[in-house]
Structures are given as structure tokens and as C-alpha cells.
Amino acid sequence: MPRLSDTMTEGAIAQWLKAEGDTVARGDVLAEIETDKAVMDLEAYESGVLEKILVQPGENVAIGAAIAVIGAGSGSSGGSDAGDAAAAPETAGGASQADTGQEPPAARADASAEDAEPAAAPKGEDAPKAEAETPADASQAPASSGSKVKATPLVRSLARSHGIDLGTVHGTGPGGRIIRADLEQLLTAGKPAAQPAAAASVPTAPEPQSAPGAAAPVGAPQEDDERVPLSQIRKVTARRLTEAALVPVFQLTTVLDASRLTEVRRNINTSLADSGVKVSVNDLVVRAVAVALAAHPEVNASFGGDAILRHKHVNVGVAVALEDGLVVPVIKDADRKSITAIGAEVKDLAARARAGRLKLDEMTGGTFSVSNLGMFGIDAFTAVINPPEAAILAVGATVDEPVVVDGQVQVRPRTRLTLTVDHRVLDGAAAAAFLRDLTNLLTEPLRILV
Image 1 (cartoon, rainbow, N blue to C red):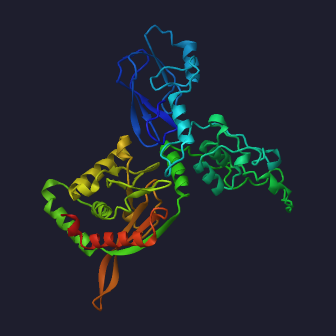
Image 2 (cartoon, rainbow, N blue to C red; image 1 turned 120 degrees about the vertical axis):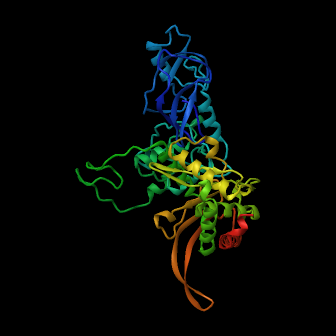
Image 3 (cartoon, rainbow, N blue to C red; image 1 turned 90 degrees about the horizontal axis):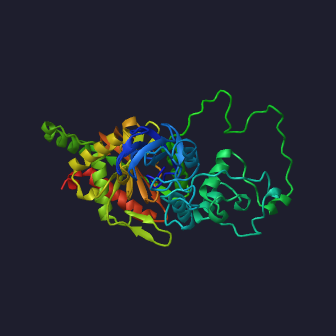
């Protein structure tokens, strides 16, 4: 199983396009792989005969696990040898490494990703999950002060946010390093984090003991609960949102008079009626965001650890809801594209996102995101930043409201815009200036059509 996206830790076979015994050439598509972001083609790395399929459709396996055997056609790779291959990590070339004693490329990539200090919220993922052993209490755990704990800054931050003493966690990474998967295993198991040994001496009131058959802890499954396994997209969404929770953010909200915006959209669609092209309010918002970002490079940026990274390209992500998760395809160089080009691209990307047919480069490289729930009648909401981007715009519904204009009460269509900002990159005044200019562009949208 190769790594097909920067956040992939495991994959599932959607379907095999070749059968056992088929002759395959290098570059032939063998199967479709469901990753955490999309369904992607798996090409043969070598020519030969597909002698054995080791993983059936619907099965999840970790990166580096063998999923098939391609041989010379003699059948020597089948039978018990195929079982051995399944237990051995597979290289990028598809050959089992059972006899080489070398770490597979996927594992080496994970190890180096853990060793490196992330500049912003990481794009890569940890090595395949290994079960973490956690002492039942602090008296059984190794003292955190007795030896240096090996962990990246991200892991330390996650541990602090969940009250976990890293000195009590068994690391499964290279050299005993504690990796994110160790913490995830601990949290998923629902075990309370062990406290430092020093805290064990503080007298506390005894906790009431649960009698046999007492109610299960919060979060534990009940008998009548329905268990819904997480899809690949749901897994990465949960992981990414947990990372985003570590970003210090603030929000700004303003109310847009959408009178001219709705009028301009109506006029554009009338003029394009013969072509069959239609422009949505969201398309106009994406175009206005791109123009505003070009004028505010301080917003088109990311936090880089010891520096702020200002991006040369304006790439606007558009959140698309799926049945089992959320993806954010990216409009590259949106400030250089016309409103009709943006509209056509958004529709194409959204359709392929729902079909699971997006390419990896269509979901990466974003510098700002837009999330719109107005079509659900939501007046206003707060969107979660998509790391490592510095901001995201939440667009609410357009609602007719009474307002005072020149001393007279009038009914105007109004839309609430909420900007969520990474405070490490931007302060309130700079973010407010961006939101003000964006609102002005949408109030008089003819300026974004030039």
C-alpha cells in the first residue's frame, strides 16, 4: 500500500481492476485505492503477472503493507510465500522486503517526518499506528524526570492540551520516540492520562468505587449503540480538526448589504443565459476573496515557526460537504481568473469531490478557505481554520432585513460574514482591514469583474 496523499496512514481497496493471473505492464492501473481524501488509481510499478491478491475490496491496510504479488508468472510467489509477503512491508516498487531487513520507504518517511519540527500544522502523518502501552497509574509509570522524553513539539502540545504526562507514555516511534499515534491510541482507548509521580503524594479524597454492573463511563459504547466505522475521510477530518484546535484564533463578524451583489449576479446570469453558464453568490465571494488577498499579502500567509510565510500565489479553497466528511478543493491563482472561470472550476471540483475523483494536487496548496452554509438557512457560524492557512471565511444565508437608509426604514438583503484568524499570523487591526475591504468589494461587486 503506497502513500497516495500527504495525510494518508492507511488505505482501502475500492476495487481491483486486474485479476489474478493477468499479465500487467508497468504503469497499468491495478486497482482503485480509497484514501483519506479521494479514490485514486494504483499503478503497477513493475511488469509481470499478478500472481496473488492479498487484500480484498473494502479492507483497510496500513501504508507499506503488501496488497498483491507481481511475479514472473511461474507461480512461485503464490501459496505460503504469498502469506509471507503479506506479513512483510512492501516497498514503493511493490517488492516484499521480508529478506532485506531494511525499513520500508513509507516507514522511513514517517520517521523523518516525526524527527523534523513542523513549521506549521503538519501536512504529513505519523507512522502506521502501533498499540501504546500505558501504565494504569503513576506509580507504575517511568518517572518523567528520570530520562529525557523524545517527542516533537506537536506531540508535546497535544499532550498538554489533553493533560497527558509524556513520561508515562510508551513511545513506538524510532528510538522510543513518542509519536502522535501513541497519543491517539491512548485517547481512543478512553484511558485517563497518568499524572506525574510527584503528584501522587498529594492527598486526595477517595473516589467512589463503581459497583459491578454500574453505568459505563461517558463515551463507552452501550449495548444498543450503533457502531459506525470511520471512513478514511472522517478519520483525517477528526485528526486535522484536533490539530486545528491547537491554533490560537479569534473571530470577526460583519454584515454585508447584498443588494448590489444579488443584482449583479442576476444580470450576469441573464447575459449568460444562452451559454448555459450560471454564477452563484459563492463564486462571487471566492472572486472577491482572491482580489482582497492580493491586496492584503499579510493575510495570504501561514505561520512558519520562526517566521511568517507570505505566499506568492493566491489559492482559495472551497469547502465541499460529502456524505461521510469534508474536502476542500483549491482554486489555484484565483486572483487571475474571471468570475465565470472560477464558477466553472468550482462546479467541476465539487462534482468530482462528491464522486471521489479529485487529484491530490487539487486538494493541496490552499492559502485561504471559504465555507458557505447559507444554502441551509444558517444565518452565521464560525468555521475552523484549515491548517496551515491563516484564515477562513464563513458565509451565512442572505436574509431580507429592515434597515435604516437615509432616515428611512427599508428592507435589504443582508449576509453575515465571519472571519476566523490565526492570531500568530495576524492581529485584530490587520484582519479587520481585510474584512472591511472584502465587504466593500462585495457591496460594489462590479470592481471584482474587471
